[in-house]
Length: 309
Image (cartoon, rainbow, N blue to C red):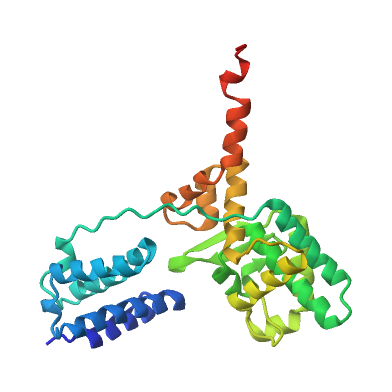
């Protein structure tokens, strides 16, 4: 008898040790699959073979009543991957998902960007805070904070990618950073601004002992790897000091990076590569955001402007 709960645990171990998925993905899988198992348990189903297409349809309908489309899509993907594993292990004769047609429209949620003058204001605030620091502790924190924000905006990397950077991933002589993205995919980006390189060099020199001990490039006050929550608190601190009302998240720097390049006429496929997107479809969301560029084109290039009427 194939009891579901132990098989889910086996699948999660398979994801961790063979597929080598990252901790956040594993956590999401565990949440989604535990929820699915609890629902199955309520129906007193013990054997995997008893899970029918109708049962899955009812479960998915319940998800739609509770969660937003993006969350539903993720949960379905988690369960679908589980059943592909069952097929691979020959625990089921037929995959019930093969008899389902799951299609639903996911609303387009445009990525939120940061006005460029606000990013400049945040950076000015950090550098001023560093210059006017009354203690060495404040000065060093501001130095690290400047390096973090500068690198976020210079590369458009994800916050998880930034926090997991190792010392050998950043080559300040060649001005490059090696990024380990989703699905263990690597990409190398050029850091194209001398001021960003300079602040990274200053940070690396000042924090050399902590970096060597921690083995991560960005460290906190305790000498441990910087967390994404610490970066969020950092951004909140300087937006408050800069008297900026907009709630800014680390991911908004990534959106602003992509949108700014698109508005500067950079080919979208280059942007896709720099962001580490596996599909151009994901990157194309930024084409909806580049309204300022679109407005400029239609104002200056459209032939109607030359009409006499």
